[in-house]
Each structure stands twice: as C-alpha cells, then as structure tokens.
Image (cartoon, rainbow, N blue to C red; front, side, top):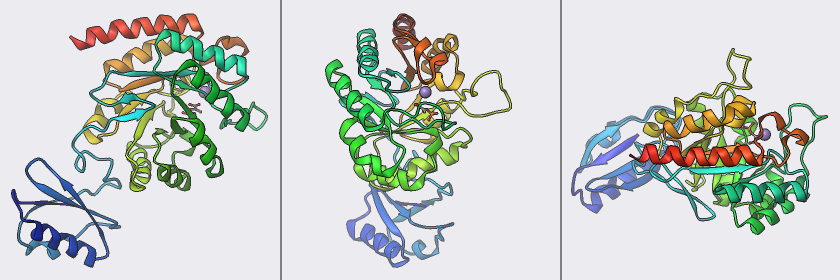
Length: 336
Ligand code: PEP
Ligand code: MN
C-alpha cells in the first residue's frame, strides 16, 4: 500500500505515519514527490488495512498495490530508471542499445573476433556465456571460469562493456569482477536465492523472462533484486513457450508497451532466442525497436556454422553489420 500525504504535510506528520507502519511490524519507505510525499508500506503478506492510518493528520489517500511487486512498479517510482552498464545507458527515453556477441565463449580467438565484429558494427555492449544452461548434459557446457577471463579480456580489448550469465551463487563473485552486467537467464528467473545474492552486489543485472513466466512472475522476480537495494535491473523479453512449435519460442512483443506502463525499469528484447533462426532475427529486432524497446540483444558468431551453441540463430559479421545499418535507419524514422 502507498500512503499519500497532503500537499505540504509537516515532517512530524510523516514521522507519525512511519512510526505507525513500524509498530505494525511493517517497513516504511518514504518516496519524496514533486509536491507530495508518499510512504510505501513494505513487508505485508496480504492486504494492508487502512484503519490504523485513517486518523493520522496529514494523510490524504491510500493506494493499494495488491500485486506481488511494488518497488519495480511505476506507482512506487514514476520516473524512468536508467541502468548504466559500463557507461552505456539503458532506459525508456534513451537511445536503444544493441548488445551482441556469441551465445557461448568457445575460445579466445572466437570471442576476440566476435567482439571486434560487434564493436565495429556499432554495438554498445558485448555478450557471451561462460556458464551455459544447456537442456542436455551432453551439450557444450561453456568454458566456465576460463571463459570468463577470456571474455573479460576481449571486452577490455574491444573497449566494450560486457554482460555474462551467472548460474550459481558460488560463481557470483568472479562473474561480477569480470562483467559490467550480470545476466540471470530464463531458466533461473525464479532461482530466488540467486536473485537475492545477485541483488546484494549492486551491479547492473540483466534479468531474462522465464520461458513460461507470466509478467507478474517476471516482475516479482525483479522485485527480489530491488528489495536488496539494487534498482539497476534491465528486463529482457526472450520469447515464451506456447502451443506453436514452428519457431523456438513465441516472441511476446506486446510486453514492451505493456511493461512501459507498469514498470520504470528498462525492457530489452532478445529476438535470437525467441525465433531460433537467423533469417528471422533482423525483422524481430526491428519490430522490438518499433514497439519501444530500450535495446536488443542479438547472438553473433564469426562463423555460425561451427558454433558450439545456438549456431542456427547466430548472425555472422556481415548480416549483423547489415542489421545495425537497418536499425540506424529505423531509429531515424522513429525519431521523427
Ligand atoms: C543466453 O542469453 O545466453 C540464454 C541462455 O538465454 P535464455 O536464458 O533466454 O535462454
Ligand atoms: Mn544462446
């Protein structure tokens, strides 16, 4: 619940509300506004009763936030949050950013070349997985910590900030040393301990939507990170599982304008994991910008035919460079 104070409410009045919230075993969070102060009530398990607050002077109205998330919602934080990844800004009102790189770190040469390609084409952030969540245990699992240091070196050499996935809490320290942004993948979207520990680090987090997650569950997962005091969270729509088997997933682009209304956090789109086929990546990347995404994340491999992971959906240097030119042209049209 949000308790909205009268315009010009005096500090002792606000303090009295804060004290009443605490006396109920709940956590107050004051939200200074342009002309009115609101006080958020956190820590409740269900509906918060207004009765204990009705008689307090200076209280104007109550807004019930019945959803399982509060800190991520616009009700709590009307202004857009800008997430900075190594100086690159992601936000609703910002220029869209392209994150690009291979699905997995396979070798020093492969990542160095991928970083060179995406940098030259104008990507803002490098991606690459050292720890790979694979469906089957016989598939390439990633180079682990060795991959992490190769990736960090490639990022420094190319002068691009880097995002990489963490799968377990015991990897977090080293992942956060190597990366500018920590990715939590679709399969771990509801790994609540990992969300909490990652949130505690205070580094930007790229949270991908679980393949069967509702938007309420997605936002509730982000809420775990914000509750640790870290609001540097980018949400990523990467396709969901539906009845349709023709494509790898179904890209749910409606979530972009929807989430723009509901949350202050930036939302990007990963067309690669959504469609699963390289020839469909560019149209959906463009569609993502049209619906207002704060960026796109695209898999790029110097030689997709030899990729150890997700080759069929990876763009090569030429097609990625062509896509970047198309996105630049599109941005000009959208800016008009
Ligand atoms: C990835 O981005 O490398 C990845 C594994 O994606 P997802 O978690 O969306 O499947
Ligand atoms: Mn992949």
